[in-house]
Image (cartoon, rainbow, N blue to C red; front, side, top):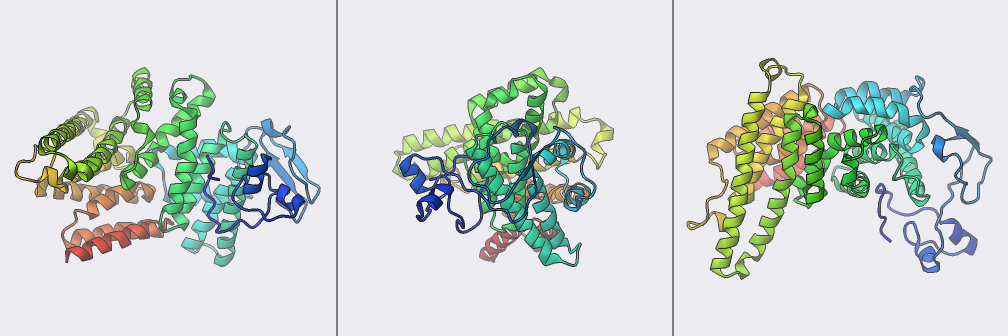
Length: 467
């Protein structure tokens, strides 16, 4: 049975039977719940045996939950306060804040990571394990310790524990409303970007974890005015770039493009004009490009079965939508330049502004690609569409490379650059530009994100076809 929410468990096989199947002495098949528990309409739980006695750190509000299953050892439940300062002796946690985030800044989200995680990780063991997994794996990639194999094993064990804990919390229905859940699923996804070079596990993590949790909370998340919800709102706006990038890279639907979410987002910013930035303005319209790309692809697939008049009407309508979006992009660029003070324009430490400009140049090429590669928009009788000339495309590519270099120099997390560099690579016609894109992707690999190798392979295969 498919799991509704929660992290993707990358282990190849289930190694433990659930408590019910153990009692019945039968084979345990499937996930959680297993097939046997599903058929008998029983709750499916798996008790993890621990070799030693030790404290179990739990959320203050969860201390009254009964322990399910049969324990193999005596356990001491330690009820921690809601907020505590980081433990200085925790080497992996210290490394995460002082080294990993320093090399991989998440721009606007980085200060929130420091503040939020410091107060959450000690009563959220799954969050603590996710941080340990990222730090240990990052150490192995950078050769910080002599025992690289030990750190790699520690990373995998911490990751496995975090996944198991999250799955247990989902079963007990105590995960969705916990403030640490969003951070945990996000960090588990980041771990997969570091470990899995294909990106498939990250996609499963994000769709089943962070994205699903945000959708379950609904657009009302942006309407409620209370302190706890403010943290969720800040998390939403800081991490929606992951959801947007996922949809753009894979040309897949996003909940951000639905009317109820776009309306809620617009209303949120109307009530907070002082918090409005050019980056947020651009990110507000990016889901519309994904929606147009999907509908245009569906049209191209079915165009051959249409009568010429119907085909022309559909092509014209889509082309007009593209022109409207292109106009919105140009207006955004003008407003951005006019609203940005001269001192900020020259401030190279303003990563948020650079990131917004990077995505402006990227989405401009992306919009061109929606139409310029499709026959209904390239024929002699095709309607006017937002197709760019070669010089304009080359200028956008040059800007993408320059801005990417600047962001990496400031320590911005390379995962934000995957979509821009992939778009630039699809238009890189000379060897120098191609070499520069590969150089930037290898920097991202060196900083710990193995998934960048899949982009390197993808672009190399593409460029071979051109030769």
